[in-house]
Length: 234
Length: 388
Ligand SMILES: Cc1ncc(COP(=O)(O)O)c(C=O)c1O
Image (tube, rainbow over all chains, first blue to last red; front, side, top):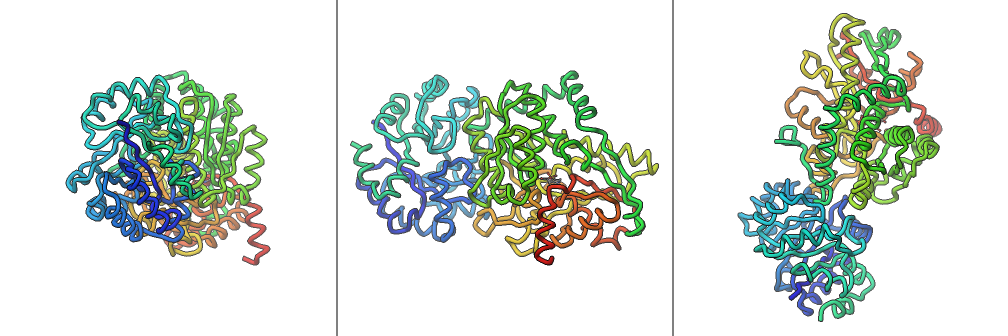
């Protein structure tokens, strides 16, 4: 069983088409959703997601994103994650953010590595929100052990070097670490660079699932998300 | 906590960069213990870069202001600004780590030029990211970088200034981290960058202290420096932190203190997370990074080094603001009275002293002239054409 997650930028291309995309994900049985709250300086993202984020930011703010996510929660039944950057959560207090978004299952912060995750994880934990840690092909093996022990939600395996939108590939460092994570209590989800059914099969030899971002956004931009989902799920 | 100044600092970057930051920390520790590497740097600083830079008693400006003004002449350092202190040091670190490719961001172009200079000297491939607006307003430095052999990549996204250049440099680094070292140009970014850059820039303060004691026989009352990310300021402040000397950092007030029209991060911002560290940040109510403005490309940045945030909170350093028009006054006065054309960045420190001349009356002060102003002549010309 290989779980498939889809990443969408909140309210991209607009509220209406975004919510339709969420409904499609529900209909196709997508296993989890990651909704990106746009940040002005998304340094972990490639051009596609950056452009989408900046487009939304020209007209919307946090109140809009909160409203949109509440609606997502109503129409999507499986696990729902917020993905964003540290400052969006930190700006008005982590507690405040956690309270506001206590209806989501977990939070992923692209610029919060394991080393800096404690202060976030602690607060989110009190609101029953998971915190996702990352592992990369170069993660130090001692750190990997700790991450495995302290994970309270899935482990996000960054399969490639580079920002979102690069090529998919698993090198020996990646496979070595994925094998070490295998019998852990949490799912291991491979992200960054997944586009095709073939990539998914490759990743799921070693992991519990994948998340598809850039490719989903691209197909949504071209109004082809339905075809894309049909193609990768089945 | 390691990597923190009080509550500020940290390593807020993609997990992918953690390995490279660990590696850098290790290389830096090794460098500090390595006599021959330090010897190599000292030799380059002296015979190639021109250290020590003079501390000059500015007689005419002193008479004009009614106080004793000494200028620390980083404008006389090779390539025209203090930036080379850091890039020579980090280029040697790059060799330590056996990396073959250097990337850098630049705003005013001075850090880009200094990185390209060090890379040319040590035979390392060099890529510099520069926002489109900065490439236009600091065109002489763009041309210099190209002559020095750097591959300059113009960034046409986001603010198209220093902030966007750092975004792109970070993206490049994530992608090419195994063979690439990112030479950050100020005391910003994730740990250990603020510490490394401060270490290499602290030579300014060490020299200045020795020189002022020799020339004036006592410590100054105040030391004043402009603050963008904060590297020239930290560099000179480090020499006087433990002394009874007033330290003043000057931020860019731009056109006014309305959000979007200035870059006075410590004066008007609140703590936030950008480019790898927790520090004061200019941001909107929702945590989106704010638009900023300064006439000076090197100060036109919404963030600030974490150590400055700490020094502000502890009260050890005072931070003031100099507006665009006041910086232009400083630029012109120093040129006319002393025959020294400062960088527009450095002109903020001079402009602040002009504006607060009553406060400084009778005192002995040191102003850090962080760079020279050749790069800014185009800006001055267009201001005059517009009748400013
Ligand atoms: C001459 C000069 N002074 C000052 C600065 C501001 O940087 P920092 O605050 O790191 O010294 C710059 C940056 O480009 C510069 O070129």
